[in-house]
Image 1 (cartoon, rainbow, N blue to C red):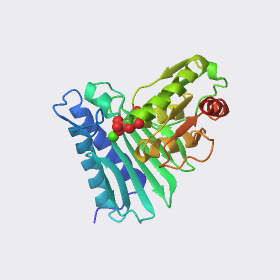
Image 2: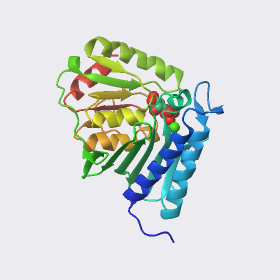
Image 3: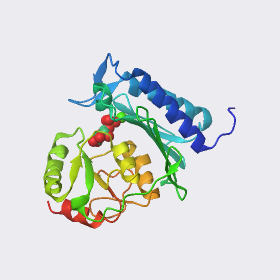
Length: 262
Ligand code: IPD
Ligand code: CA
């Protein structure tokens, strides 16, 4: 039996180890495999996932695991009260192009409630950690969402998934937000976009069609930094719901209104 370690410690160590492996492969992608027309998997996704799954299997063999992997999903023990939700490399397209916005994301839900989120961005060397009721931290420093109180002073981000019709619909939202805000960003990592909302670097983020592993850790980060996360109707955001709106809370009503406009 491995020594007893807290779930937090195991998740942090796995994220750091996986992130360092990804960083070692950065700039040397020799082979990508296509899951869809533009959706790819690299050796780094697979290596990172192996490292994380090994750590979880070793310490918590009975826990449930849901992980984006190799064009399918590694799912086991899904009846357990504990569910680890993993994106071994969020921002794979960025990684493959040497664009440094990518991260490892590990979330833990207990009986369906978000308990722990760990996101590690290896090039930035930024480790985000949130625990329910304990706050959100970046490299040990407590995070707070921004206090921006008007959309026109806000910097927002969105993402465009791989599903073409979904991406098309999001273009309408993008167009609507563009004149209403100080700026919009699309930089290809949902997990980091959520962490950046938690850190006050972004004032809000929305995306359609994201997957449970994209948001499991990042959504808790926003909530623990004092922000708000809902679906596009303002209702609770379930981890596996497709539409996610995160903000500093103050801008939430204005963002909901813009999203409802069509
Ligand atoms: C993607 C990124 C991207 C988001 C997509 C995700 P991946 O994850 O988070 O920003 O817009 O919806 O699928 O494929 O790089 O792990
Ligand atoms: Ca991924």
